[in-house]
Each structure stands twice: as structure tokens, then as C-alpha cells.
Length: 208
Image (cartoon, rainbow, N blue to C red; front, side):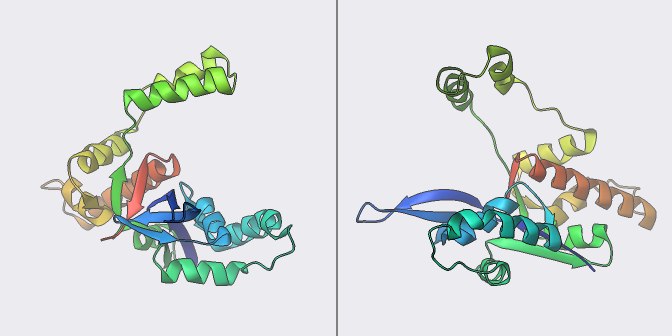
């Protein structure tokens, strides 16, 4: 059985009325406060679709920095369960990678991340003057994103409409291409395209 995980929403720091900062995940316009361990596990999945064994291994390695102060921390199993229960991460399982990926992404909404020129300029100045990156590297912030044909098709749709992956597949299913083999091929290509966009951190996953 193949099981994949991915993060939902995006991270933020919310300030309490007292002024104290609080780690949070914003999903569907609502903020959810999270513990340090939860934010660690969520961050490992942000822009990185991962299976259980790999995720457990990375979490156990990274949690050492949080437990260094001597306080007890959530185990991987408990942390994973909490995030799944609060729907801050999603899981998908199946007897093949394609089936697991479809269960993971099928009903999630794909939200494109559009970076404005002002944000690119701010990033450029930060890299060059604060981080002292060479100009030849920092200038790549202004490069246009390169998409495969399938990625471009998915990107164009989700840039116009709020769609789940299943709805994207339905929209891409052209008339005359409704044979079982053609639909399966299209579905798998769309799934890979959506996964690639997520792994490149060009989209955010959310649920209604």
C-alpha cells in the first residue's frame, strides 16, 4: 500500500492580543495555531509530497533541535495524527502511486501563487544587499517560470477558476477523448502536473 502526504494551506505568524507571536497555519481563510512540532512536520510537507517512511525519518532527525532544551516532544505518530485530524495535512493511499496520488490531490483545491513585481524586487534587494548573493544569481528571480505543456494547461485553468484536481481533469477531458485509455492517460498526466507544481511551490493546496 502506497501512502502519500501533503500540507494544506500556508504558514503564518499570528500575534496574540498580548503581542506574543504564535505559529499558525492558514487554511481556507481560517487560522489554526500549531505547536513547534506540528509546524515542523507541516513544513516538511509544504511543497514536498512525501511517503510515510521518508517523512518519519526526516521528522525524527529534525525534531532533535526542538528537544535539545530538554522538553518532551510529540512523537511522529502523535504529531501526524493531530495534523490529519485538524485537516492541516492530507493523506492519500492506494495500491499504486497513481491511485495514492489521486486520493491525495483529487479533492484538494489548487491555488496558484502569483509573485508580484514588487515582491520580486524586494527579494532581489534582499539577496544582493543582505545576503550578498552575486547579481548573476539574484537576477534569476525575474526569470519566467517554465512549464511543461501539461503544467501550463493546469496552471491556466487554476489561474482563472477555483478548481479541485478532479475538476481540472474534467475540464481537460476534451470531447472525443472519452475512451477509458485516453481518460486514464489524461488523468495521470494532470496528476503529475499538479504534483510538480506543488513540489515546485508554485501552488498551495486547500480544501473547502
